[in-house]
Length: 111
Image 1 (cartoon, rainbow, N blue to C red):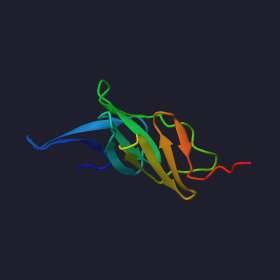
Image 2: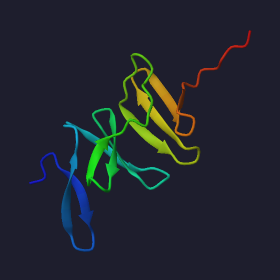
Image 3: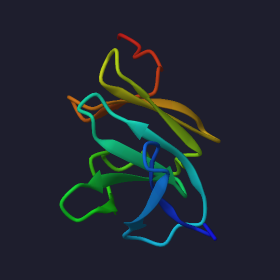
Image 4: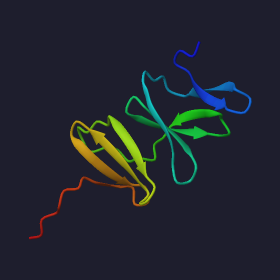
């Protein structure tokens, strides 16, 4: 019945309203809410943002291009510092939403 569907479940009426994802996906990993109350869906190592007007999840390009060769297997929102934690085979990255910069956690050496 709910094969490859995503939607909103109304807990008062016990109804399910399907919502579309504008790009085919195989695996939805999680749904989160950012500090501005926007709904973010993480699927197939991509981030989608829910658009109220279109009533669908659209591919979100708010995260800058990942460093070369980096793949994302999971993500989490850190509301305390407006950042996304991204993890993958290559390690973890911290993405600052305000500055749109990545922090790999590596210390810069001073010359």
